[in-house]
Image 1 (tube, rainbow, N blue to C red):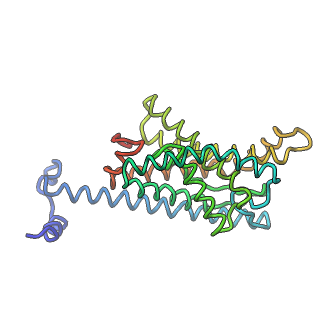
Image 2 (cartoon, rainbow, N blue to C red):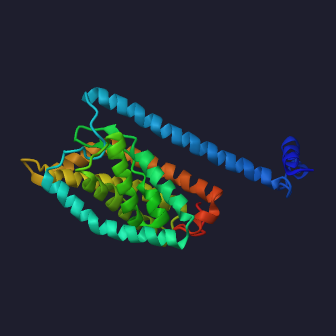
Image 3 (spheres, rainbow, N blue to C red):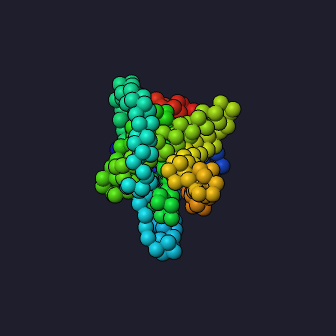
Length: 294
């Protein structure tokens, strides 16, 4: 009997051992594993569809109240030339380290290119889901925590910069003059904070799922704390200066960013669990090693 016919027979039959309340027999175990994989994929699809829908609904409501839809990240031409150039210069050392890190990752195992592409696509899609704010920026997930957990924070400085460059050129989100500022907040500060939280959580013995959730959530929130600081430095308030401006920008971002960061953390846990279920041999070569996501 061929494999396809055997699988069909198992699907149409009851396992005698299961009727007695025992564990599934050896021949039925692959079918049980297939059902488990199906449930994981279905949960991932539901979560992936629900997040864009919720963000799109909130975007339309907020855009109607504000009266305009600003660009995502810090918009093109929004920063004064001095600050735009300063943030570009601040990114250069991290880009050099990130380039070396990427070369090492690919040289170590050529199949890592697929996971690198996944990390880039995840960041691109999530950070394209924008909610406009009245600050010249916008609120959205970042998606950089996943790549930081897989390959470390330095690789994300290059991946994130490429993501932001494509968004500026293809989607008119962000901008070329503000690429340095957006890269520093989303592709450097966010991954560094998220990775540090992830390693610290694992070091103190927290479950992997909790560590993944904290990493993704705090990488998101730290990105917007940095963006608030960038805007506050460029546009200090007349009464109160940089500190008052920083608090104001943080408060405006927090309205939407806190629930978005929580949603991103939950979605990233689902993604990591799916990766562990579907490609354990690929995950074993990354920062996760062979440890279970539980």
